[in-house]
Length: 442
Image 1: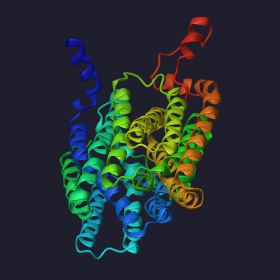
Image 2: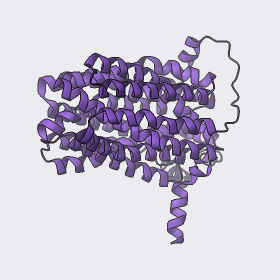
Image 3: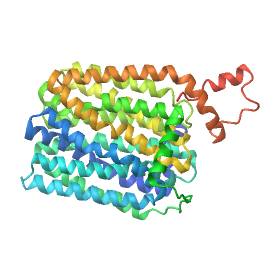
Image 4: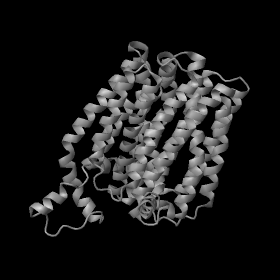
């Protein structure tokens, strides 16, 4: 009993920080609505158009602003008050959801409305995501619980991913898509309230006279010039373009290949959320960042294999099971990459590096969505998803081959930051060499 309580306390230790506890509670409610809107939007588009290509177009419209604007947002997140930026982005996102709800509930929605509103939300997210990622360190008093906070944040996202899509599927069957958008709009009140209640210590910002473009260039040079960071970003970019677009094709699988309706779509998305939740809880239970690097190629391989098997499944039960593995692999990749980047990066460049993290994953996704929509219209949705799974596995193999080199390069950074003990006079004996060989392979 005591051991179980101790383990639970270890998993939830970041909740001891008041600001993070507020954030966790508000976001937990808001994200359920966010996932409901995602499922409802995909089903609405496919119901109105019967077009896999337009699913890709909507996905592109909602994600391309991140590719264009996220690096700029990272510079601003390093210079401006991150709490205020988040209050603005969350308020605008609430307005977008409520406007979408009005259009659907009054039966006046058209496809061009969805494209415009998806683009607007994409602009909001381009500023919200890098700011939220870099804000994480401000909600934690001391960095020792940062990795746990990131993992718990992933747990929260995927707990909502479990509940939101399933609830959306049932609501769409019962009352239509509009209620899902309305619920999402109202759910933003929870996260806005939590942000207002936070007491954040003023962040020291070094005065810089350099222009915005120069700061952006410096951040890019910093990220790309350090191979452990650039390798993670490139791995995320590959999965984003080739693997993740399976989500925009999910309505096609649910209706045309698995012979289901919006409830089937919700169960598939919810199953991916369950797998991701398990992955996030596993990461939250870890006490150290050490060992996370090797999990990146493993998680990508699990993700890719899940996609390949899913593409050939014609059974709803089997497909739901495979989504568990796919969601697990995806979440471990994202959370492990996030944690490793946050522990390696210098504080004054955190916003910019996390903006590149956002760009690598979310920002490149629109190109993958557009590509997936085009490929699905030519070779079919199953083969499109299969190709994405194969590409992801090949990328994981290449990453794994670079692990020993990446590990050696990140060692001095972790020693300097105190993440691992200082090794006196270098690595001079077999025992020390064995120790370093167990350092995370990033």
